[in-house]
Length: 306
Image (cartoon, rainbow, N blue to C red; front, side):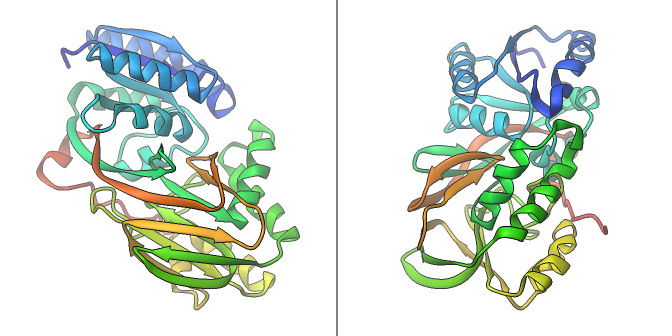
């Protein structure tokens, strides 16, 4: 990869994992004779500024952190502004997981050296980009709890957040508009999925594709907490979509409101308050993917068996 690169690092991502692995990542990039400079960031706004600077300098933008950092940087590289390379350093790393990028940041450096560029979709909420899943309702409380939990829990923090949120959850009434078609229901969540997974390997939208120009909208209607609890493990395999209270729809634009205030989360961070409009931006982001994808649209990633 002859292009100069900007390595944008969130040292605190993954409970400090990104900061700890940074010297090894630099050694791996040095071994590839890549010309790069390291920029440490501690806020998403600063990461966006660094991404804009990298794009203006025609540098490859590399992220070493979590999905929140990836989404922030991706939004500034959209529509031909730049190319993204992903080095997983957070707790969930679901974007890399879905794309077949190694979960080990040092091993993922090989994708920077030998990967191929591919155009992927971006999600958008009120002008703010995301790469994974934007969700609201039960998920909002689960994400809030997970973000406040100890980093020592690793990616188990997302399951912990879901269990804690379920204990105090009360049903909400949601009003939706999917490409102009109105829909209402009472239940747990609305999730607009650009990608398949979130929460450290939860395949909430197992059939979502990153290059189809559509959002998979996962609706979880009201059911007993006992049934909801029993179905939680199925999210890791994507089998929860077969439950009678779960429905998956597709659209390019989703409008969502609720009967009480909610914060929408995407890529693990707050992105908007309801009411909100979620859109897809087809093929807006150019990303370095593992080289076998050169001969097919995207790697055939399937949810794990357990």
